[in-house]
Image (tube, rainbow, N blue to C red; front, top):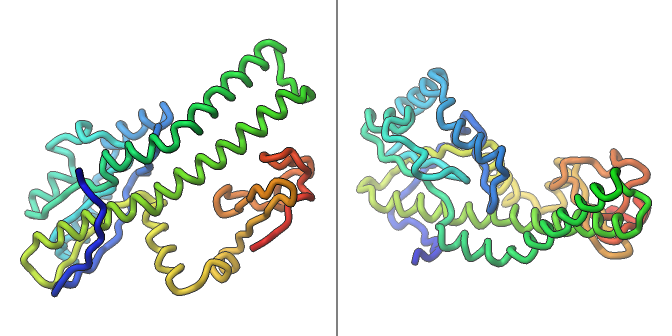
Length: 267
């Protein structure tokens, strides 16, 4: 079993070059059906322009190795003659896919299984009520309660999944990068990382967070957190991508169904 250990390099320096992938690379415990389809097709959409960009970067920086975020793609969907792999072979550069280990992913997924099961049950029950009534029964208390509970559970699940997506997986990937660096004999190393857009941004934001505290960072990005004064549920503009002020006036707290006015800004 692989264990997460982040030991610093000894007597070596490593410069990492972050390169954004041409297509989105995302990760889920359970990838939506459409996303799974897109992940396969994206493997065949690498353009000649992007290959030329990568080749120019290689010729400019001469990396010792290149790693690529694997995300929710399957190993067997990568062919030997994949354009990127072929390019790295022609340049005699070590290439590897990196991500969280399967064992760690399975363990963390099991911890969230109860939430996933409840969300699916509530979704089925909500669909049954809509089918039974022939419409969305907005005025029924049971329907409103189930909808609010599902939204609350979904928010909690996505929050925990995002923590794994952007923090835990990042640690596993960094460990694998360091392990690759240890195998190279040179003391001054360069590595290139092919990331999806969100992951590349996460690395940049992490560096920003080392220099400013959370409050200062949120002020810089103009994002806030609102907390329901009744149930203490948080509405985080950074996670939802929607400003609190842009929510409709009849917005209800997903946790308790309280009014929009019951949520107060904390950060």
